[in-house]
Image (cartoon, rainbow, N blue to C red; front, side):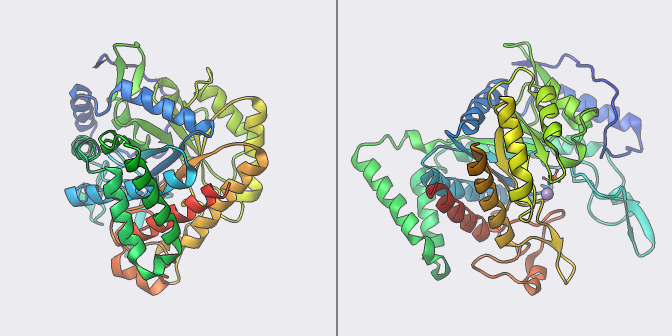
Length: 443
Ligand code: PEP
Ligand code: MN
């Protein structure tokens, strides 16, 4: 178990934090969080670290996915089920393509805080604080809604706790049984537009029948591990949930199994990198197109000085146009340094643009192209492409363009629901899994 002994934190600059209007309310919320039980356990984080170490050595493939920004309103049973279902369906296809275990990580149960390009938003002459995620304020554009409210930190904890409870129930209770998951994927293939993937689905079918004929222990396959991850952005939430594990005597973030530092907060001398150096969990750092080999080597020295396998994941988000030029020097520099990290491709954040009709969107084809470039870069550098990180939902939203459904600009308004970045819908997510499975199988 973990103890709630208070930890001390250095006073470092921290970007992207809200200005809470009431410090007493903040202290109260933090004390409440500090008194609550951990959402995840240290031993679970250690197991995930081992899984990520496998991915760093090319013995497993990571699939991390979920909303750009979770919201309290969308933390419903159906939404959570459908997101988990989408991740499991994708994982089944990727497992087949890679012939390797897939490490399934939900970008969920804590993804409630967002970095923003501006502190305020102006509409119709009125200037209000920017929406920073449900953990901070409300999306509705009115002064009382946009006021940062520390009570939301506590609500985020409860929403995360309920989400994680359901994820654990689904994944340990038989919902994730490979045979069900494959049945769901049959529904996807039944659609005429997806005929192209029929062969993979048929091969998986045959593999399952082969396993059954050999007397495989399907009972064991009824339980799957789905881990929880989010961006460690809001330090006022993360710090009170950081606890000392009594077994190892080391601090762990207990808000999620895997936490990452975003592209905008990864300054080596600031509070976010400092935070992840102090926790024992496996952690990620997002890496954009301007990152230099020196930046990455310095991050490795700070975040993973002991070179613990699975400890550090670089989540690269280059953009389709530059992934083939900007990624290889980074891969080579890290490889030449002798360090081993897990490389995960985020093909979403380097490919965002505004559609002609004013929606923040991404093209399915650009996303596929960045993943393809990621595999090529690793093949050239002789490093392991360890996985992918995608923004997705289990719902039939219309936020990203393209895919076999050929979503066009005019379709975006039909069901554009994200409060932050555009997500792949259920169909697009599965299609991506099949395309990437083909890439993995062709290696
Ligand atoms: C995100 O993952 O939603 C995000 C803000 O990404 P990045 O830090 O890569 O910009
Ligand atoms: Mn995003």
